[in-house]
Image (cartoon, rainbow, N blue to C red; front, top):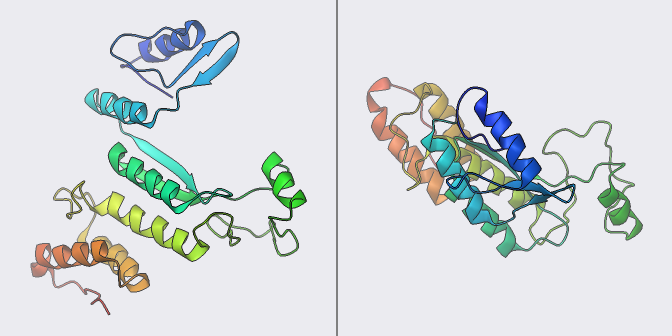
Length: 212
């Protein structure tokens, strides 16, 4: 949703934009209604422009993405990751595509033999637990991407340095970055964050996980 101001005006203005297909000159269109249908503008650069607009009027940006779609290539996933970085949302997360029973894509993938329904236990499936590879990138690598990108979003600035104004206690910083580093000790961006955290919190006597 696009919010363009404060109080009651933004929602009513957005409704008018959706109904008429017109927009204020200083607000790009994320979606609009025409001929009774809602049309979505799929230009990714437009989303980053909207994010900048929202930040400029004091709004918090949170973004959630899905990777691992059937047939999705490594290049497409990397393009999504680059878009996430450009958005600079205060909170962003990547989820692995999970075709749920009852959805059209679940039926399509099942009928084509792409999805192995005999090994799926959707009754006990939790968030992030889907383990069948549907894209060009393996599930373990997708989980690595999710974890590293989440840590970088929370603790790093756009240049990959430890944020100087973290509203998180140092113990949590070490715990989260350390857990990521234990899981993926070869990730240079996490090694960099870990080293910077040690330097910043050197006087706190906090346990720091050393990279392998």
